[in-house]
Length: 383
Image (cartoon, rainbow, N blue to C red; front, side, top):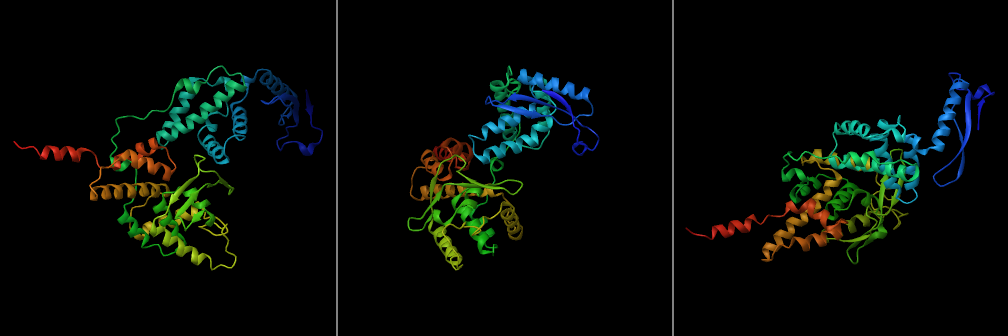
């Protein structure tokens, strides 16, 4: 351990800093590593920074918050999917790091968390998303407790974000979707064969965008009318693309309707005219996947042309569920059958790759209520 003066002026900073120190420390895995500091203006500053570094080394809870966060992300990258780590880092960089990068981990108390939370509350984001960010922050502090000697988690003490329960939300605002008639109007304006097939596929399967992007012809079984969903694709900001297991790490089989079967078969026939066609090709994009920005640009273009209200790609998923609910209720009434929502959501959860509880919480309000049956009873009464 020593403070050194860099003799080679070519290595000096532009503003003339040339003093630095070298120390050794052990990382969270017990491995001895060398630390070379940045340059300082004079020896006195370098001495003070070295003393602070040694204090942090011997008392880990004096470590800078950003250093702990970096170690946390390095740790979870060994067990979690790349897409999950990327998502966490993105939220951390946007909503956590700017507020805590000047703090040491042991200096962050509930008052600091309260100030951070008040800033997050000002952002036009949903409470669920705020709590997703909150969980990342909690995880970093839990990691610091296990690996840096921190005594308590101030984020957990402060608690999660709460939504005011006096906000009036109509059923129509809970989820957005387009009806079958609206979809038929929309798709009638899509004149590009690639995008026409893409949006038909999204509407009639309810697959997530990343799952559709990652699909290859190998996953389509026309003989049994089955689609195997076994992976998803995500794109990072800098253009990196990763294909990983599905969101919940579970493969699922989706049955095709006759209409989807015929449309997809006809589309494949056209694609197979390419001399280098391969079953390994992406269904949408051939040798290269179809990018998210290109999908969204074309989606919105056809919504504008058609005059149908614009929805997101995720809301195509909502639209698929709405379509199935409407058809299930219609067919049940025609056959004089009881509408069994429990059975329906059991079948739908397997198709959509969600738990039954999530499906019920999200879509139950789309079913006709028992009020109709109650009114029938009342109407049968006479005075």
